[in-house]
Length: 139
Image (cartoon, rainbow, N blue to C red; front, top):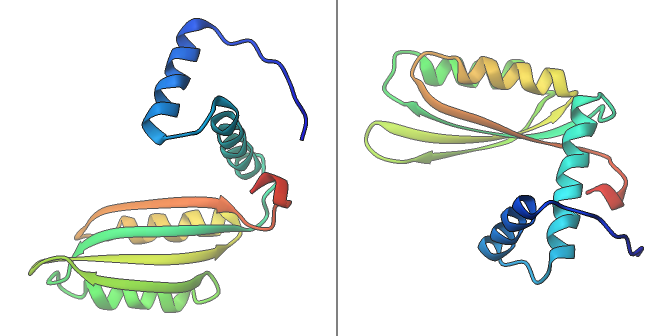
């Protein structure tokens, strides 16, 4: 491990201290390490350094919508090389939550997620992406 010195303006330091307190970090170093890792992950995806990503696609949909369940199932089957796993949860009489784990090139994972989220009667959707295959120090 290496020791470094950084300079932060007062407003940024106050904001960092609020994050540290809210998330329960033991010290500033741990928080800054996590923020640095998150920034490196995002940069690796944005710059194309990450050629493979893991995506967690979560979405809520109306299970009673005409043909939606069939269309969603077909979408996952048509992209079986990206879809690693999925879980289906009945939230109430009308709504279901589906969580899909995806793995593949960033552009393909993003396109797949956008296709699912844009289906009519999908009420909410979110894709969380992390790079796959980065050196341990960056994970």
